Image 1 (cartoon, rainbow, N blue to C red):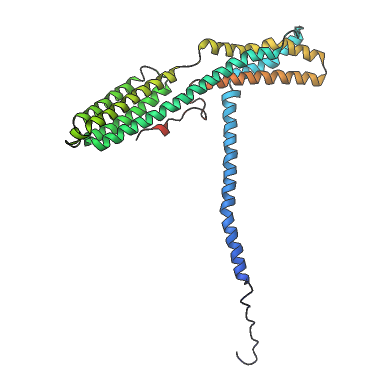
Image 2: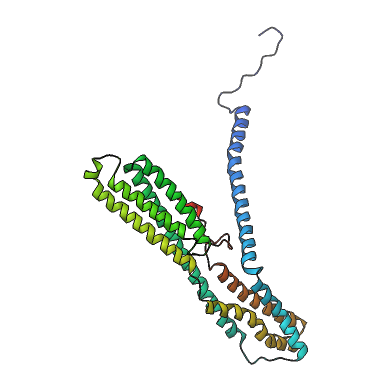
Amino acid sequence: SRPGSASRPQPDPGQPRLDDASTAISDSLMARLPTRFLLLQTVALARARQLVTLSEFAKVALLTPTTLRAASLSVACPLVCSAAGVVGNDFDPALLSLIIAVPSSISINAAYTRRERALTCLARFRSATYALHHSIQRWGRPADRSRIQRENAALYESLCVGLESGGDDIMFRDVFRHLEEIGEVCESVRLSPRRAEDARDFMPALSTLLLSDERMLWQTIDELRMLSSTATPYLLRGFTVGGATLFPVLFGPYVANAVGAGSVLDTWSAYLVSFLLAVTIGSLVSIQEALEDCFDGDARLDDIALPPFAPP
């Protein structure tokens, strides 16, 4: 050092430096930031899904003609009965609501069972088309390989139209036509494979697999057609819809009696109970109607989405 100048203090090697500590803190913050951001994003997505679920429930169960009609009658009928003096408490409203709620619950369970069977059938449809596609791509000639891919795509599009139409026979004509075309492709591969020696060595076993996959495809599509065209019997559906409409009317004298015999708080409680019972029964009937057809798209969150089951 030059004379007269103060010497700088040398840092102790055993003591941590300030720069190292700040760098460590900065690295820790940067490491925690993505985790916190992902957590916030997950919470936001969960809340958004809850809002979508609530809005879908309101559209499917609450904001329907059946529920709105039952809710209106649950308030109007007690008012009319009170004004006309038609009051009475000789019956149990819980028994009447049970008579309507039980058939609705049974219908909902039947619709859910049909939906699960339809999912199983769609999974079999996808596996059968994949198996036929890969078998013909491996053993068939170029013309057969391109044809099976084209027919599988056309079969899927026709099946979507047929299922969304409720299993209409006219709409399913194209489906069965494409199934026949797929059968012709399988027969072409069986008679003239890509290599001549395959006809002697592998074709007996391969023909069994092709025919088995083709048969499963036919059975699956026919079962899907029956599921899409089958619904709850009209007598049971008419009973539930009519019961949800008549329940507030029959329940009116009972509520009118509770309104006339109590205080203001009891009056509001009676109207609230009548309203909630009517909304509950109307919602059950509306949910049952929305779940009747799992392909029509009226219940967006509960209906089956067909694109995941598209063939290759």
